[in-house]
Length: 65
Image (cartoon, rainbow, N blue to C red; front, side, top):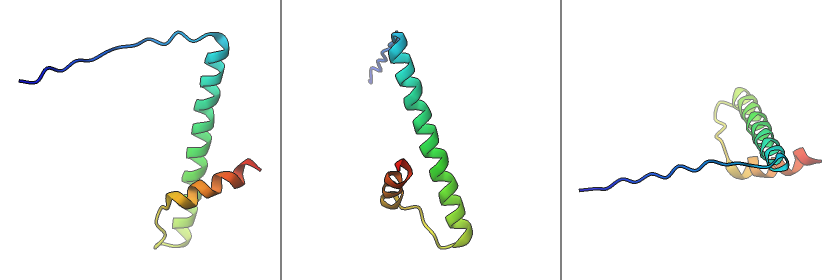
């Protein structure tokens, strides 16, 4: 017999913490959308192109500049 347990937590961030979490979520959305657009364009040009995490991670440094 298995006993399953779950815990529920509620976050109560201060104003500054809520802004930081919002900025973090926005940054994640930006990186995801830009990576998706880049991969779509690369796969459109070359049908043999495969997603490569290392290449995507190396592109992040170029996007910051």
